Length: 187
Image (spheres, rainbow, N blue to C red):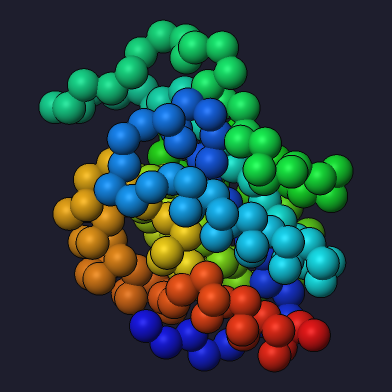
């Protein structure tokens, strides 16, 4: 885990910290993920850097071996957790697939803001975070992972993403590593 730099225009992208997702059983407590994400949100907002909050309201069509939810989600499922304190300057992306780039305005928004790097946090590590990271990497963004500000429904899936996939897509570090680097490069 070694973060080298944060570009001048780095955005924070927080994946699926919403009522219906944080209520699920996860490998690491979602309360810790939310707390660390809030630290990142506060730091990015105070420096005037772009913040993107992502929620999910459905799933992609198609067959799969593993059962997936179908139909409408319960009321409040997609509501962001209040701890995030959504601000008017935050950009909200509502997705219906695993990744935040597919069929959304995320790429166009980031490019309009001049963003060249994203920092990722959220749930689930191997699904929403990883899918978003793969697209970001393919689109040419530098990707940084705050690995202690994310979790998964399964510990082995989380570990696989963090140790095998993420180092191939970007740089990994802790929330504190990101905050320290942010403090040095965006004072």
